[in-house]
Length: 227
Length: 225
Image (cartoon, rainbow over all chains, first blue to last red; front, side):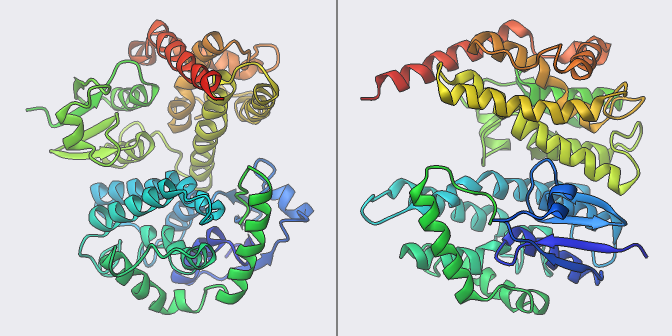
C-alpha cells in the first residue's frame, strides 16, 4: 500500500474533515503538523498554488482543497462509503456541501462582530443559513447522510466545536434548541460518533486560538482562510 | 414530456457548461429559458435555495449548481466520459475547476468592476498570477482533458470568452495573448468546436450585462460619502 501523509493544522476544521474521512475508512496515514505563520518547504512544495492546508499526499502525489480531498478519499478507499449509492442522492449531497462552502464568508464575518457594531445583518444571515440547513438539508434525518454520517456531515463538522467557540467568543448564541432544534440535536449526535469524539481539537485551546485570530482580523480588513 | 429538462438562460457560461456536457454525451434535453430577473415560478419551484440557473431536471427531480450537475451527468450517462479514470487525475480536474472559477473568473470580475486605483491594480496582478497557473496546466496539450474535451475544459471553457467581455466593459487587460499563449490558443480552439460554438453565450449579451453591472457598482462607490 502506498504511503499516505496529511499536512494539517491542529485548529483547522478543514484538516479535521480529512482526518475524519481517513479514520472512518480505516486508512493509515502520517500526520504532519504545519505552522502556518512560518510555512514549511514541504507545504510550499506540495501546495504551491494556495500554500494552505490540508494537503493529502498519497504515494508522493499531493492533493489540496479539503472537499476535493474528500472525493479522492471516497474514490480511492471505497469501504464505508461516505456518499450515497444513488446518483440523485449524491448530487443532493454535493449540492449541500457546495452550499456550505459558498456560505463560508457569512460565518467568517461573525469573527469581526462586536456588540458596539450592532451588525444585526450578519447575525440574521447566519440564522437564515442555519434554518435552511435544518429544514432542507437535514430535515428529520439522524444525520445529513441518513442513518450514518457521510460526506455532508463531515463537511458541516465545523458547526460543532468551531461554531460553538465563535459563539462564545462573540457572546451571541445562534445554534440553539430554541432556534434550530433538529440541527442542534445533530451537532450533539455528531460529536458522540466515536471517531469524531476522539478527533476533535481541545476546546479551550481552540477558543484561545480563535480569540487571538479575532484580534488579527479586527486589526485588518481581510479575514484569513488559514484557520 | 421530456425526460431531461434544462432550466437556463442563453447568456450564462454556467448554463453553457451543462448544454456542452449533455450534447457531448448525446443526451436529448428540453431547453427551458427563464427570466432570472423576474424569478419565474419554475425557477422558484426547482431551485428554491438559490433561485438561479442552471437547473437540470431529470425524471422530475431537480439538481442545481453547475459543477454538481456536471458530476451528475457524468455518473448518469457513462458514455464519452468527461473525467479521467484515475482518481488522482480526477482530483486534479476538480481542483483546477474550482481554482479557475474562484481565482480566474471571480478574480477577473473584481479587477473589472473596480474603478481605477490601487485596488484595481492589485486585483489585476492577482488574477494574472492565477491565469499563469492555468497556463501551465494547458501547456503542450490540445485540451485540459488531453486529446478529448473533458470536465476541466467545460469548467474553464466559458471563462476566456467571459473575460474578454469583462475586459472591454471594465477597461482591463487580463488574458494577454503574449503572456498566456497556450491558454489563448486553447480558448480560440475550444470556441470553434461546433458543439461548443452552438451554446456559447453571445458576446454582445455578456458585454451588455457587464457594462450595466459595472456602471451600477461604480456609481454606488461614487455615491458613498
